[in-house]
Structures are given as structure tokens and as C-alpha cells.
Length: 462
Image 1 (cartoon, one colour):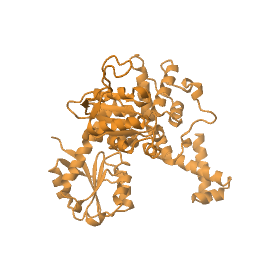
Image 2 (cartoon, rainbow, N blue to C red):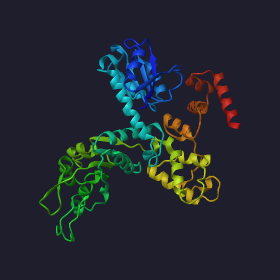
Image 3 (cartoon, rainbow, N blue to C red):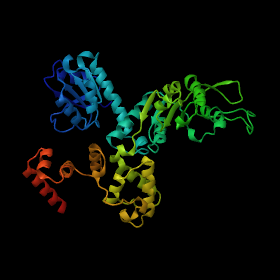
Image 4 (cartoon, one colour):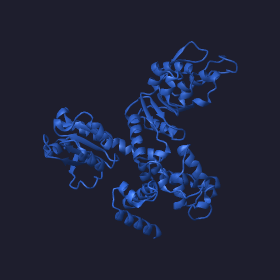
């Protein structure tokens, strides 16, 4: 069996752990530790970081080595005084996947090896066709979500509650959970949209009915909980269920037993439950519209799917996916997208999230003719921007603007120049064009600000 490669990074004197001994211990557990000599470049894979003291420098290294959480990184304190309470949470926020103290951990080499083995399996699935064929996205937010989903789907049988706005992909995620469920005798995924259930027929929809149980019941019928036996039951928009039906479903979830409508016979069922809602169920509990005992049964593990506005860096990949979907089977080459059209797609608001983006891309594709790229004329008139052209600086929030700039293909120097130009404009506007006061706010000299403005104008005219 091939050894898993892990980059070994040491900060400080390495008190308490001779690194050669550590490498030998981990080698015995299946890890091939390779020393990272250049700390200025992130390692091309998972890393093990040994540190002696906590501080700002350590947090900076964690962020850089993990590429902001994109790569797996285990941070290990090498002696008892390395970590205080609360320090570990800061390391996780900086990008570490896990944190442990070597002196306080029984058999730390075994624990480290087990962590990396699990992460390797999860990340292999993140990049596998079963995921990439159905879900598009490479950004940190989306990758972090997929890691969570895959871990709970593959290594547990817990009920899962998916939270998020309409159009964020909750049903696709439910199908992924079912696909990754490792039960060898797994049966079907049964989908039930709770918004479409007629109250008078709700019992029959969920539990089935006997012949003659009510007017029109001409034959016995299985309900969703019977059809999902041995498989997965996905309840979409579970927040719409009335409290009485929640109580009836609670018994099924807790005990795996139910009665058909019109029957006195208890029947058994076993399924994995995946639920989804756009509602805030904790708020609904406070308002008396959702049972707290039912909530805790369906939310053994919960996940909030990000809206598209929080993962704009994935929009180019989604556009590419939706165009390929549109042209599939037509024998035509998938057209490229010109920069102004991509800018519009990147900066536009999407109340309907990914579903709305998909619909817009298909509408644009239907208008496009010829073998050339998609141009602004292909955009429906009602979708065209009003007034000033759409630009990345129109995105609220500095981090969101940086993500958007990266999605447009801008490099670090270009992003830095744009940020500096924006800061100069904002400072001058805030001081009504007064150069001296704007320079003071920016912490530079009048001369430096004049040169910056001249450089910016020259670049704009190139």
C-alpha cells in the first residue's frame, strides 16, 4: 500500500520532539514525512506543522501553509506550554484542519496518522467524478462544505438537516449523501416535497393507507416511509409540516415504527433521513410552529449551504458547466464568454442562487447564434445593467471584492493596484477633494498621494 506523503514543517527549537524520531514513528503508521525547506511557498499537499510557541507569526504561517484552509494542515504543539485555552480555535480559523498538543495526547503518532488517513479519503472523494459530475465549485467555501458533507455521509448514519436559501442545491446534496452512503444493501432514495402535500392526505403520503381507509382509497398503498425502507428519505422543506404531522413522524424517526392509515398493525422501517428547509427552525421553535424534540431528532448533523453571493469565485466554473449542459448532444462547440458578459454574471445579484444563474445562462445561450463567443448582445434586455458598467468594486465587502477579482483572473499585483486606487478615490471623496487631508487619512505624504494619482491615471489610459 502506497504511503501518504505529508510535508513536515518545524517552527522554533522543536522542544520535546526530535523530528527524526517523529518521522520514523509516522513512517511506521503509513506516512511519508518530507521536510519543507522553503516556508515562503505553500506545500503542494497536506502538511504537519510543529510549533513551540503560539503567536501572530504562527497564525500567519498556518494561513500561508494551508492556503487559507484549502490544504489540510495539522498543527502540533511540541511542549505543554505551547497552547493556552482559546489558541486552538484561532489556529482553526487561520486554516488548520486540527490542533493537538503532543505531550498531552496518548499515542500522538497514531492519532496524527489516523487524521491524515481520514482527510485523504475525504479529499479523494471531493475530487472524484461522483462529486464533480454533479456539483461544480473549487472555492474555499464550497470545498469546505463538500468536506463536511462527505465525511458525515461516508462515515456516519446520522440524520442530516440541510439549511439554506432556495436554489442553493439542497436536493443535489441530498442525492450526494445517498450516493456516498456505504451501506452494502442500500435501497432507493425517496424524495418528498413537503410543500406539495395536501393536509387531508398527509397521513397517506407518509405512512400509506389500507383499502377503504377513506373515500377514494380503492387499494392499499405504501407511503414514503415504507418506500424508503433500507434507503434514504429526503424531506424537502420540512419546515412546512404542521406540528401534528411532526409528532407522527417523530415516532418513525425515533423507533422506526408506523401504522398505515386505516390499520391497527405496526410496521417497521429503517432509513436514513435527510431533511431540508429555507426556514430558521430555531426561530420556528420559539414561535411554537416547530417541535423542539422533532428538531433535535432530524438535526443530529446540520449544514448550511452558502448562497451564491458568498461563493462568487465559483461562478465562472458554474457558467462553464451550464453552457456544457445546454450544448450537450447538439454537436456544437461550447462558446466562450466575453469579459463584459462574465463581469455581469459575476456581479449580478441572484436571489434564486445557483438555480437562477443556471436559468440565466440558458436564456443567454438560447439567444446566441454562430460559432463566436457569447457577447453582450446575447444578454436579454431586462438583464442588462443600468447606468455605469458593472465592475468588481461594486461588491460590498473587501473580501468579497477580492474573491471576485480572483474569479476574473486578476493577479496579486493587479488586485493591489485596484485596492490602492479605490482607497485613494474614497479618501479624496471623503475629504471633498482636499489632497492634504486625504493624504493624512491614508497615512502618506502629499507628494506620495500625487504620484499615486498620476500613476493610476496613466495606467487607466494605457
